[in-house]
Image 1: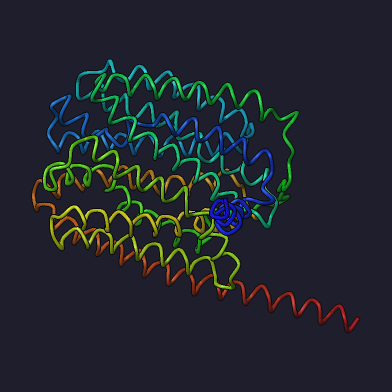
Image 2: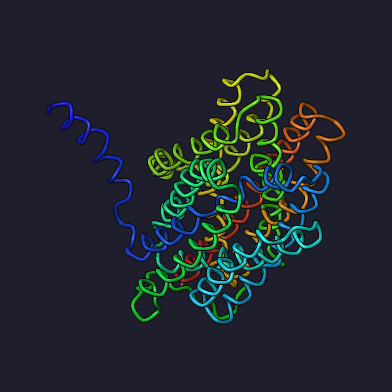
Length: 424
């Protein structure tokens, strides 16, 4: 009994305390995201499905993944534009319903051309959700809770991904790949129904509505585009964990699909368990958000380099652990950085471009990774990815200098205005 009380007082209660202050609407948005992402079992297994079940070459798989990225770019941009015009609620509902039906339809496509078009169509509909969801998150969150609200959404996503691949590997073993498409479609539709029930505009509370009379153009925001370029490169490296690295696990490490699913589930489980306490600890300090983004990018690059130290399961697990820590730090703070930046402009466009940065990585990252492996092998590919991560880090260092200079300029202007007012 004393042990249970000790565990509750010193582990469970402090952990639950990291969630204090988040609004009911943010919790519902996280739960809808959890339902939606729990069914995204197809995506981690897509490269395996296309090579093993459909018999495609790595080159063709790369082109299908490029279609995936093109659809993601189009969907994110359309989602951002529509969010600014008709609101986040309608965009989220349409995205969930449309993607649900498209996921079910995707399993019936058999030719290379039809799969390219089908995957692109799925992603156009599915990724309209992302910018709308981030704008909704901003509206439902108090200003001081933005980063933790983003973290809660990420916990929902990763809990879904944690359960999804593990269950997905089991479904493939028992039912084949067809079951994955049905689960994806059904969960999207279920998420849309829940959205109707709990986040209708007439009942949801807006805690931080942002209205800018003369919004600045995102296209003139130079620091944001330095950040955008760094995120494209980072996404290029990060997405290898969802396309080429599963093939490396299978071909070189000799893991089964179920074991690959469990390894990816470890990533989601650790994020669910540790990310919120980690973010609350880091957020309580005085360090700039960009500093944490840099640390996350360094850890990600190092995780790829580790794969060249040997073909042992322990190395693979350690690489996944480093990637997970980097992901836990980078994503919440990069999301929060964009949310803060978007307050002076059109939020939908800012959040769309943030989503598009990873969509562009989808276009080139999967395809280039597949072709690099075909021509240069796994080891050289991991070295190239590590070098790309260093480029992203240099861009982020440049961004930090630009933003600090910008903040100093704003502070000086404020001091001058206050001084003039005092003299009057």
